[in-house]
Amino acid sequence: MLVCLKCKNDILPTHKYIQNSVGIYHLDCYNKIQKMLKYSILVGIVFSILVTIAVIVIVVVV
Image 1 (tube, rainbow, N blue to C red):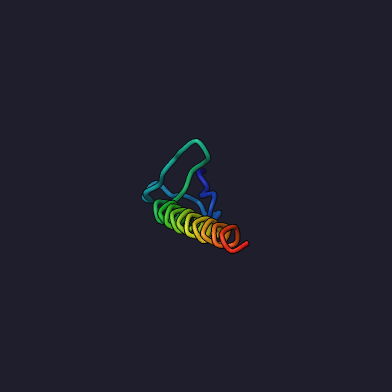
Image 2: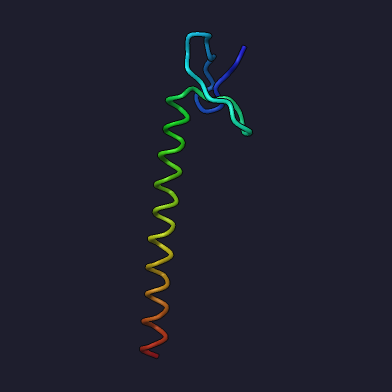
């Protein structure tokens, strides 16, 4: 029996699922993970840009 790694529920033969190198997921669970990953990367990029601007401002002022 296949089990989704995210929700820990069984994957029935009628369910759509994705299998990758990490494991097996329901299609909906996989899409939620992908969306969360995209937002996490976006937040990381914005945070790094803000930190870079803050460092530049501190260096210029001092």
